Image (cartoon, rainbow over all chains, first blue to last red; front, side):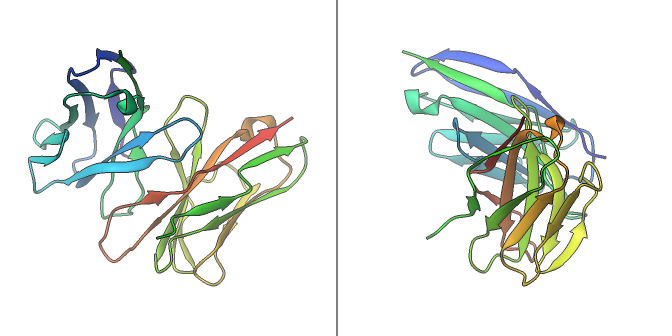
Length: 112
Length: 114
């Protein structure tokens, strides 16, 4: 089955700097890659996603890139703000069964 | 509009008790998923419904776990004879279905088994 690896597990960046989180997946059939943000005591919130027919997608300060050949995908957050502090999860899914396989998460700290 | 809601938000059960966790998906969403999230980990898939049909229950950890969605809307996850290892946050997500992949999560139910 699918396996999603996520790095780093913890990331601290100065406010205003950029943050990058990287993930790899194992199943070449995976074709949908969502990213979720989870704040303490809340459920995961979908912040951006990318499908396998696209290499890059951007939404304001957030961008995702996908390298299908290498089975790598990344989340980039620019001009980080205190409210970006949270746990971020990458995930992968295929239309074979629709279930989402999550990485273990990255705890992002934005330092003042 | 209203998102996915779950109840109760917190549940404390004594070991051996049965519990029932409820999920109200977004109105009109065909697909419904249950995930289990242990402390400090990512959510792990438990089971999946399309309308009232349970299409995948491969993630249920034991036969003590049972899920249903009898009318294709509200779903209940039941855990019989709870054990300490069942302590986790149980998350429900719903999706429009029909090729739409986006899953929207509820706030979860934190289950603590003492």
